Length: 323
Image 1 (cartoon, rainbow, N blue to C red):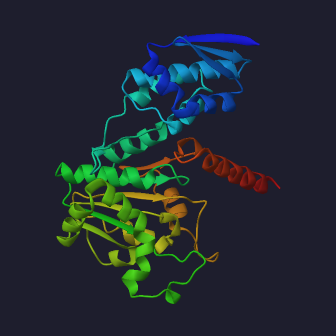
Image 2: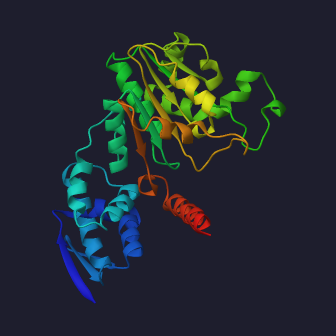
Image 3: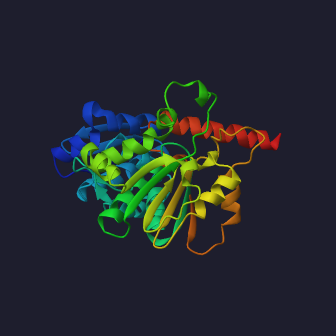
Protein backbone atom coordinates (compact mmCIF):
# COMPACT_ATOMS: atom_id res chain seq x y z
CA UNK A 1 0.00 0.00 0.00
CA UNK A 2 1.37 3.42 -1.02
CA UNK A 3 1.39 6.56 1.13
CA UNK A 4 1.23 10.31 0.54
CA UNK A 5 1.34 13.34 2.84
CA UNK A 6 -0.16 16.83 2.76
CA UNK A 7 0.82 19.50 5.30
CA UNK A 8 -1.92 21.82 6.55
CA UNK A 9 -1.34 25.26 8.02
CA UNK A 10 -3.24 24.91 11.30
CA UNK A 11 -5.90 22.97 13.14
CA UNK A 12 -8.64 25.25 11.82
CA UNK A 13 -7.80 24.18 8.27
CA UNK A 14 -7.85 20.53 9.38
CA UNK A 15 -11.26 21.08 10.95
CA UNK A 16 -12.72 22.61 7.78
CA UNK A 17 -11.22 19.99 5.49
CA UNK A 18 -12.40 17.07 7.60
CA UNK A 19 -15.86 18.54 8.12
CA UNK A 20 -18.35 18.05 10.92
CA UNK A 21 -18.04 14.50 12.32
CA UNK A 22 -15.41 13.85 9.59
CA UNK A 23 -18.13 14.10 6.92
CA UNK A 24 -15.79 15.39 4.21
CA UNK A 25 -12.96 12.96 4.80
CA UNK A 26 -15.44 10.06 4.92
CA UNK A 27 -16.72 11.06 1.47
CA UNK A 28 -13.16 11.01 0.14
CA UNK A 29 -12.30 7.67 1.78
CA UNK A 30 -15.46 5.98 0.51
CA UNK A 31 -15.37 7.58 -2.92
CA UNK A 32 -11.70 6.98 -3.68
CA UNK A 33 -10.94 3.86 -1.67
CA UNK A 34 -8.25 5.37 0.54
CA UNK A 35 -7.57 5.75 4.27
CA UNK A 36 -6.91 9.20 5.74
CA UNK A 37 -5.31 10.06 9.08
CA UNK A 38 -4.45 13.45 10.58
CA UNK A 39 -1.21 13.71 12.56
CA UNK A 40 -0.44 17.18 13.93
CA UNK A 41 -1.73 19.06 10.86
CA UNK A 42 -0.19 16.58 8.45
CA UNK A 43 -2.63 14.43 6.51
CA UNK A 44 -1.46 10.91 5.77
CA UNK A 45 -3.23 9.19 2.87
CA UNK A 46 -2.90 5.43 2.33
CA UNK A 47 -4.09 3.59 -0.74
CA UNK A 48 -3.42 2.43 -4.28
CA UNK A 49 -3.50 4.27 -7.57
CA UNK A 50 -5.48 5.84 -9.08
CA UNK A 51 -7.39 6.53 -5.86
CA UNK A 52 -4.33 7.75 -3.98
CA UNK A 53 -3.40 10.34 -6.60
CA UNK A 54 -6.99 11.52 -6.84
CA UNK A 55 -7.21 11.86 -3.05
CA UNK A 56 -4.04 13.97 -3.00
CA UNK A 57 -5.40 16.23 -5.75
CA UNK A 58 -8.73 16.48 -3.92
CA UNK A 59 -7.13 17.59 -0.65
CA UNK A 60 -4.82 20.00 -2.46
CA UNK A 61 -7.78 21.50 -4.30
CA UNK A 62 -9.86 21.87 -1.15
CA UNK A 63 -6.88 23.40 0.66
CA UNK A 64 -6.51 25.92 -2.15
CA UNK A 65 -10.17 26.86 -1.89
CA UNK A 66 -9.78 27.46 1.86
CA UNK A 67 -6.74 29.64 1.22
CA UNK A 68 -8.92 31.70 -1.13
CA UNK A 69 -11.52 32.04 1.65
CA UNK A 70 -14.00 29.86 -0.22
CA UNK A 71 -16.44 27.80 1.88
CA UNK A 72 -16.03 24.03 1.71
CA UNK A 73 -19.09 21.83 2.14
CA UNK A 74 -20.06 18.29 1.12
CA UNK A 75 -21.14 19.46 -2.35
CA UNK A 76 -17.79 21.14 -2.90
CA UNK A 77 -15.94 18.02 -1.77
CA UNK A 78 -17.86 15.86 -4.24
CA UNK A 79 -17.25 18.32 -7.05
CA UNK A 80 -13.51 18.60 -6.41
CA UNK A 81 -13.34 14.81 -6.20
CA UNK A 82 -14.84 14.75 -9.67
CA UNK A 83 -12.24 17.26 -10.91
CA UNK A 84 -9.48 15.09 -9.44
CA UNK A 85 -9.87 12.64 -12.32
CA UNK A 86 -8.06 15.18 -14.47
CA UNK A 87 -4.34 16.00 -14.29
CA UNK A 88 -5.19 19.71 -14.53
CA UNK A 89 -7.47 19.55 -11.47
CA UNK A 90 -5.60 22.39 -9.74
CA UNK A 91 -6.05 24.66 -12.76
CA UNK A 92 -9.78 24.05 -12.65
CA UNK A 93 -9.86 24.64 -8.89
CA UNK A 94 -8.09 27.97 -9.43
CA UNK A 95 -10.83 28.93 -11.86
CA UNK A 96 -13.44 27.68 -9.40
CA UNK A 97 -12.06 29.92 -6.64
CA UNK A 98 -12.07 32.91 -8.96
CA UNK A 99 -15.84 32.99 -9.55
CA UNK A 100 -17.28 36.38 -8.71
CA UNK A 101 -20.43 36.92 -6.65
CA UNK A 102 -23.54 37.51 -8.77
CA UNK A 103 -25.63 39.06 -6.02
CA UNK A 104 -26.54 38.71 -2.36
CA UNK A 105 -29.71 37.11 -1.10
CA UNK A 106 -32.02 38.95 1.28
CA UNK A 107 -30.10 37.40 4.18
CA UNK A 108 -26.71 38.46 2.81
CA UNK A 109 -25.68 35.07 1.42
CA UNK A 110 -23.50 35.43 -1.70
CA UNK A 111 -24.78 33.73 -4.85
CA UNK A 112 -22.06 32.55 -7.21
CA UNK A 113 -21.31 29.67 -9.61
CA UNK A 114 -20.04 26.52 -7.93
CA UNK A 115 -19.08 24.42 -10.96
CA UNK A 116 -17.36 25.04 -14.28
CA UNK A 117 -20.64 24.40 -16.08
CA UNK A 118 -22.36 27.03 -13.94
CA UNK A 119 -19.52 29.49 -14.60
CA UNK A 120 -19.91 29.09 -18.38
CA UNK A 121 -23.68 29.48 -18.00
CA UNK A 122 -23.37 32.74 -16.06
CA UNK A 123 -20.83 34.07 -18.57
CA UNK A 124 -23.17 33.13 -21.41
CA UNK A 125 -26.04 35.05 -19.80
CA UNK A 126 -23.74 38.03 -19.28
CA UNK A 127 -22.61 38.08 -22.91
CA UNK A 128 -25.67 37.06 -24.95
CA UNK A 129 -29.24 38.20 -25.56
CA UNK A 130 -30.78 34.72 -25.39
CA UNK A 131 -29.34 31.75 -23.50
CA UNK A 132 -30.64 28.20 -23.32
CA UNK A 133 -29.66 26.32 -20.16
CA UNK A 134 -30.25 22.63 -20.85
CA UNK A 135 -29.53 19.87 -18.37
CA UNK A 136 -30.68 17.76 -15.44
CA UNK A 137 -32.37 18.89 -12.25
CA UNK A 138 -30.18 20.25 -9.50
CA UNK A 139 -27.69 22.08 -11.72
CA UNK A 140 -28.85 25.56 -10.68
CA UNK A 141 -30.23 26.54 -14.09
CA UNK A 142 -33.24 28.46 -12.78
CA UNK A 143 -31.68 29.73 -9.56
CA UNK A 144 -28.67 31.28 -11.31
CA UNK A 145 -30.89 32.76 -14.03
CA UNK A 146 -32.99 34.47 -11.33
CA UNK A 147 -29.80 35.72 -9.66
CA UNK A 148 -28.62 37.20 -12.96
CA UNK A 149 -32.03 38.81 -13.45
CA UNK A 150 -31.85 40.37 -9.98
CA UNK A 151 -28.37 41.66 -10.71
CA UNK A 152 -29.46 43.19 -14.02
CA UNK A 153 -32.42 44.87 -12.27
CA UNK A 154 -30.34 46.26 -9.41
CA UNK A 155 -27.77 47.60 -11.88
CA UNK A 156 -30.55 49.37 -13.81
CA UNK A 157 -30.02 47.42 -17.03
CA UNK A 158 -33.64 46.20 -17.04
CA UNK A 159 -36.83 47.65 -15.59
CA UNK A 160 -38.75 44.40 -15.11
CA UNK A 161 -38.18 40.76 -14.25
CA UNK A 162 -40.62 38.33 -15.83
CA UNK A 163 -40.62 34.64 -14.94
CA UNK A 164 -42.85 32.17 -16.71
CA UNK A 165 -43.52 28.45 -17.03
CA UNK A 166 -45.82 26.32 -19.14
CA UNK A 167 -48.59 24.92 -16.89
CA UNK A 168 -48.35 21.38 -18.19
CA UNK A 169 -50.15 18.59 -16.40
CA UNK A 170 -47.72 15.87 -15.29
CA UNK A 171 -50.12 12.96 -14.95
CA UNK A 172 -52.79 15.03 -13.18
CA UNK A 173 -55.57 17.22 -14.46
CA UNK A 174 -55.69 20.89 -13.54
CA UNK A 175 -59.43 20.88 -14.01
CA UNK A 176 -59.95 18.65 -11.00
CA UNK A 177 -57.93 20.85 -8.63
CA UNK A 178 -59.92 23.21 -6.36
CA UNK A 179 -59.85 26.99 -6.72
CA UNK A 180 -59.67 29.56 -9.51
CA UNK A 181 -57.15 29.55 -12.37
CA UNK A 182 -54.43 31.38 -10.40
CA UNK A 183 -54.76 28.93 -7.51
CA UNK A 184 -54.44 26.03 -9.95
CA UNK A 185 -51.31 27.32 -11.70
CA UNK A 186 -49.50 28.64 -8.60
CA UNK A 187 -48.02 25.21 -7.72
CA UNK A 188 -46.35 25.15 -11.15
CA UNK A 189 -44.79 28.55 -10.46
CA UNK A 190 -43.75 27.86 -6.84
CA UNK A 191 -40.02 27.26 -7.61
CA UNK A 192 -39.90 30.69 -9.26
CA UNK A 193 -41.57 32.35 -6.28
CA UNK A 194 -39.16 30.61 -3.93
CA UNK A 195 -36.09 31.87 -5.81
CA UNK A 196 -37.42 35.44 -5.88
CA UNK A 197 -38.33 35.35 -2.18
CA UNK A 198 -34.77 34.27 -1.38
CA UNK A 199 -33.21 37.02 -3.50
CA UNK A 200 -35.46 39.92 -2.50
CA UNK A 201 -37.19 38.84 0.70
CA UNK A 202 -40.97 38.39 0.76
CA UNK A 203 -41.81 42.01 1.64
CA UNK A 204 -39.66 43.52 -1.12
CA UNK A 205 -40.93 40.94 -3.57
CA UNK A 206 -44.56 41.75 -2.71
CA UNK A 207 -43.93 45.47 -3.15
CA UNK A 208 -42.19 45.03 -6.52
CA UNK A 209 -44.86 42.60 -7.71
CA UNK A 210 -47.59 45.09 -6.78
CA UNK A 211 -45.84 47.74 -8.89
CA UNK A 212 -45.57 45.33 -11.82
CA UNK A 213 -41.77 45.30 -11.66
CA UNK A 214 -41.78 41.55 -11.05
CA UNK A 215 -44.20 39.26 -12.82
CA UNK A 216 -44.59 35.51 -12.38
CA UNK A 217 -47.15 34.04 -14.75
CA UNK A 218 -48.02 31.00 -16.88
CA UNK A 219 -46.59 31.05 -20.39
CA UNK A 220 -50.03 31.49 -21.93
CA UNK A 221 -50.17 34.99 -20.40
CA UNK A 222 -47.25 36.10 -22.62
CA UNK A 223 -49.18 35.86 -25.88
CA UNK A 224 -49.67 39.14 -27.73
CA UNK A 225 -47.21 41.13 -25.61
CA UNK A 226 -43.96 42.93 -26.44
CA UNK A 227 -41.57 42.94 -23.50
CA UNK A 228 -39.17 45.89 -23.47
CA UNK A 229 -36.34 46.50 -20.96
CA UNK A 230 -37.08 43.16 -19.33
CA UNK A 231 -35.17 40.13 -18.11
CA UNK A 232 -37.39 37.18 -19.02
CA UNK A 233 -36.92 33.61 -17.79
CA UNK A 234 -38.80 30.68 -19.30
CA UNK A 235 -38.48 27.72 -16.95
CA UNK A 236 -39.35 24.05 -17.63
CA UNK A 237 -39.13 24.86 -21.33
CA UNK A 238 -39.05 21.18 -22.31
CA UNK A 239 -42.83 21.28 -21.79
CA UNK A 240 -43.46 23.95 -24.40
CA UNK A 241 -44.72 23.10 -27.86
CA UNK A 242 -42.78 24.48 -30.87
CA UNK A 243 -45.56 27.06 -31.33
CA UNK A 244 -45.32 28.20 -27.71
CA UNK A 245 -41.54 28.46 -27.90
CA UNK A 246 -41.71 30.62 -31.02
CA UNK A 247 -44.39 32.77 -29.39
CA UNK A 248 -42.22 33.27 -26.31
CA UNK A 249 -39.02 34.15 -28.16
CA UNK A 250 -40.80 36.66 -30.38
CA UNK A 251 -42.00 38.58 -27.29
CA UNK A 252 -38.49 40.01 -26.83
CA UNK A 253 -38.47 43.79 -27.18
CA UNK A 254 -35.84 46.52 -27.02
CA UNK A 255 -33.14 46.19 -24.32
CA UNK A 256 -34.47 42.81 -23.18
CA UNK A 257 -32.82 39.46 -22.72
CA UNK A 258 -34.13 35.97 -22.13
CA UNK A 259 -32.96 32.80 -20.42
CA UNK A 260 -34.69 29.53 -21.30
CA UNK A 261 -34.13 26.56 -19.00
CA UNK A 262 -35.19 22.95 -19.27
CA UNK A 263 -34.37 19.27 -19.01
CA UNK A 264 -35.09 17.38 -22.22
CA UNK A 265 -35.14 14.06 -20.33
CA UNK A 266 -38.22 15.14 -18.34
CA UNK A 267 -40.80 16.05 -20.98
CA UNK A 268 -44.40 15.90 -19.70
CA UNK A 269 -46.08 16.65 -23.02
CA UNK A 270 -48.38 14.05 -24.60
CA UNK A 271 -46.44 11.67 -26.81
CA UNK A 272 -48.15 13.14 -29.88
CA UNK A 273 -46.61 16.60 -29.26
CA UNK A 274 -43.02 17.69 -29.96
CA UNK A 275 -41.00 19.61 -27.39
CA UNK A 276 -40.34 23.20 -28.36
CA UNK A 277 -37.03 23.13 -26.48
CA UNK A 278 -35.71 20.11 -28.36
CA UNK A 279 -36.62 21.74 -31.66
CA UNK A 280 -35.43 25.28 -30.94
CA UNK A 281 -31.89 24.35 -29.89
CA UNK A 282 -31.50 22.78 -33.34
CA UNK A 283 -33.00 25.75 -35.14
CA UNK A 284 -31.09 28.52 -33.33
CA UNK A 285 -27.75 26.85 -32.63
CA UNK A 286 -25.87 29.08 -35.11
CA UNK A 287 -27.68 32.38 -34.52
CA UNK A 288 -25.58 35.28 -33.25
CA UNK A 289 -26.12 36.43 -29.63
CA UNK A 290 -27.81 33.14 -28.78
CA UNK A 291 -25.91 30.52 -26.79
CA UNK A 292 -26.82 27.02 -25.68
CA UNK A 293 -25.20 25.91 -22.43
CA UNK A 294 -25.49 22.22 -21.60
CA UNK A 295 -25.11 20.87 -18.07
CA UNK A 296 -24.15 17.33 -17.06
CA UNK A 297 -24.46 15.26 -13.91
CA UNK A 298 -21.11 16.77 -12.81
CA UNK A 299 -22.91 20.08 -12.30
CA UNK A 300 -25.60 18.59 -10.06
CA UNK A 301 -25.33 20.19 -6.62
CA UNK A 302 -27.92 18.14 -4.81
CA UNK A 303 -27.06 14.87 -3.09
CA UNK A 304 -24.82 12.25 -4.68
CA UNK A 305 -27.84 10.00 -5.16
CA UNK A 306 -29.26 12.52 -7.66
CA UNK A 307 -26.05 12.32 -9.70
CA UNK A 308 -26.23 8.53 -9.57
CA UNK A 309 -29.87 8.53 -10.69
CA UNK A 310 -29.12 10.84 -13.63
CA UNK A 311 -26.13 8.72 -14.65
CA UNK A 312 -28.21 5.54 -14.46
CA UNK A 313 -30.93 7.05 -16.65
CA UNK A 314 -28.38 8.23 -19.23
CA UNK A 315 -26.85 4.75 -19.35
CA UNK A 316 -30.28 3.17 -19.73
CA UNK A 317 -31.25 5.45 -22.63
CA UNK A 318 -27.89 4.99 -24.35
CA UNK A 319 -28.21 1.22 -24.14
CA UNK A 320 -31.76 1.50 -25.45
CA UNK A 321 -30.54 3.37 -28.53
CA UNK A 322 -27.99 0.65 -29.29
CA UNK A 323 -30.47 -2.24 -29.00
